[in-house]
Image (cartoon, rainbow, N blue to C red; front, side, top):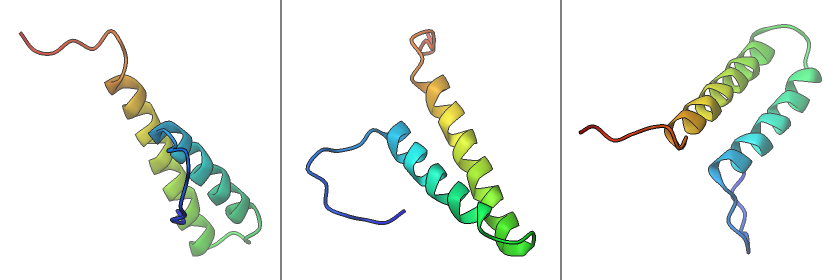
Length: 65
C-alpha cells in the first residue's frame, strides 16, 4: 500500500478494502502466471485479515475469566 499523508485516518478495515481493490485491478490486467498468482495470494491474505479483524472486534468476544 502506498504511504500518503492523510487528514483523516482510515480504519484498518478501510485500508484492507482499498488495498484489496487495487490488487484486484492489477491482477485482472495480468495474464495467468506467477505474478498474478502472487497478487491473488495477497488478496486471500487480506480477506483472512479482514475476517480475523471482524472476529477480534466482535462484541461477542469475551476476555478470559
